[in-house]
Length: 133
Image 1 (cartoon, one colour):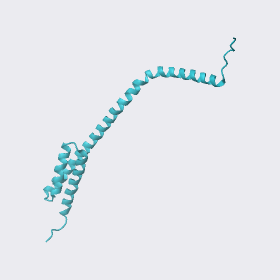
Image 2 (tube, rainbow, N blue to C red; image 1 turned 45 degrees about the vertical axis):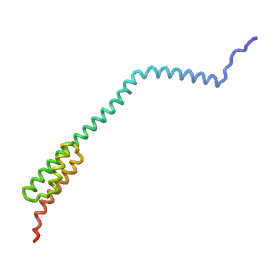
Image 3 (cartoon, rainbow, N blue to C red; image 1 turned 90 degrees about the horizontal axis):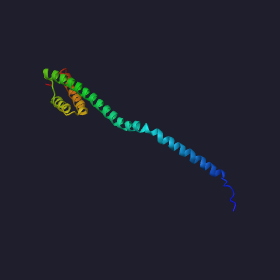
């Protein structure tokens, strides 16, 4: 009829302390993230925007390089043409490079413009050799 006072073991006390600490931490964690979701929400939204900006900058850089290579190829082909040393493949590559730049295919335009320029240079170098009899 007399119930002895409830006595806790060490394990129960440790469990209660851990439960109390977890409850307190959960309460703190629930209060602090109010400012973090906006930062966390902005980070994923900012990352694609940053990637998009980097991609556009890279595309603009490629475009500028392609236009510069095309201008150089135009000059080289015109010089070879004026000396009657223009090869047909150089002319075809120049036309293809112009078309690639118009379609914003800058990587292909760079390759084609370089090819046209190199072939025009080779046509000019060929003039230094004697004609075949």
